[in-house]
Amino acid sequence: MDTKERDLICYNLLNDVFMENAYASLLLGNYLATVKDEKDRAYITGLVYGILEKNVQLNYIVRSLVARKPKTSIDVLLKIGLYHMRYMSTPTYAAINETVELTKYVGKSGISGFVNAVLRKSEKVELPKEGEVPDAEYLSVIYSVPMWICEKLLEQYGYDFTKDFLSYEPRKKTHIRYNSRVTTKEEFEENIKNFDVERSILGYYVTHNVLKTLNKSACTAQSLASMIAVHCYLPEGVESPVVLDLCGAPGGKSIYLEELCPSAQIYCCDLHPHRVELIKKYAARMKSNIKALLSDASNIFPEWVNRCDIVICDVPCSGLGVYKNKPDLLFNKKASDIDKIKQIQINILENAKNYVKIGGVICYSTCTVFKEENEEVVEEFLSRNANFVFDEIKSPIVKPNNGTVKLFPHMDDGCDGFFVARLRRTE
Ligand SMILES: C[S@@+](CC[C@H](N)C(=O)[O-])C[C@H]1O[C@@H](n2cnc3c(N)ncnc32)[C@H](O)[C@@H]1O
Image 1 (cartoon, rainbow, N blue to C red):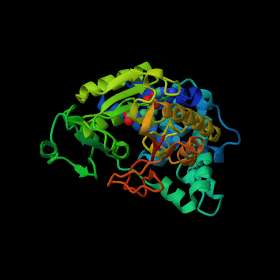
Image 2: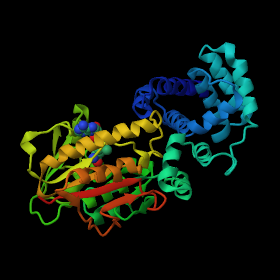
Image 3: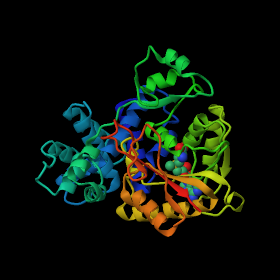
């Protein structure tokens, strides 16, 4: 494939993402289905994700050059050109020529002169400096994060924390763990000893290429934050605990919990049939015995009432803690969506309380750092349910604070942003 053909795929895909609010991660699979060459696939993936990651910054540059917001298709062409010029090693003249050619190729010859002129002028656009513009605007443009997120973080955590959180660059490696049902730590470490591997407190960071060579049932990709959450969920003092994981797909936490606590009977549910299938497939690959169930966590399920030692609510959330790896996650969201997500989280938690035995625990977790979705949800729940209290998180690998564990990438060695609380039913 030549550059024009590859850029055409990126152009079509980005138009779909911007016009239809579609998730790039879901579309990419369809678009790549006909692309055989690994280098072409890597180029397309890199350019699409790169543009999404830099979208806010690219918007700032485009808005500095044109009086009115361009139509989406023109905006995408400009962003492809700008991305080549600013963030890839493409020489400026080549980036401009290729974008002008792409403009003609997609049937927009009439605006090729405009595209050419805007890209030429863009070389003079400078990004704002600290103190020159309001803090939220500066952070938003420099770290390419929607303004409402910066405003919310500034309000909740202050400037220095927000800047450190947004500027943290995660490792370009995947976190994995070995599967104790298939191999031992010693055997697994012997197999990876000649590879480029970095240890974490619970697993290993490996490159994508190393991951491809490893045995598919002897190990699995699982983020360090997700593993730490499971250590916070661990049942205590019950011989064969009954665990209900209400929002469980694809099953990573339930499957790891079963490895740490083999006597547990674990039921892993999800709302969506295709995601329940993911749980089944993942459990089969990991030789796990967890049971997959289709169920809506916000509707009562009478047969489960008062039966569980642990109810896991790893609820749907804004995903701010993992946004660096999923740049399209927050892309089409707005500040008011956080209140809607919070309501869903509260409904799930309110329903979960019915399933817990006296003395049992609800484990509430999210992969976000917004307080509305974390502290506020559990505090609201506790204020309405006097028979629940914060339960101490005893795992030696975490430092709980007021009965909750909060992880931040810039403070916890690159761990995803995460929140866990244990809520014990007292009567
Ligand atoms: C954060 S993910 C769970 C990740 C999972 N715990 C793991 O470790 O693999 C949230 C899941 O909740 C599911 N979900 C969303 N709304 C739900 C509902 N009302 N009932 C059950 N599951 C729901 C989503 O389909 C998604 O799979």
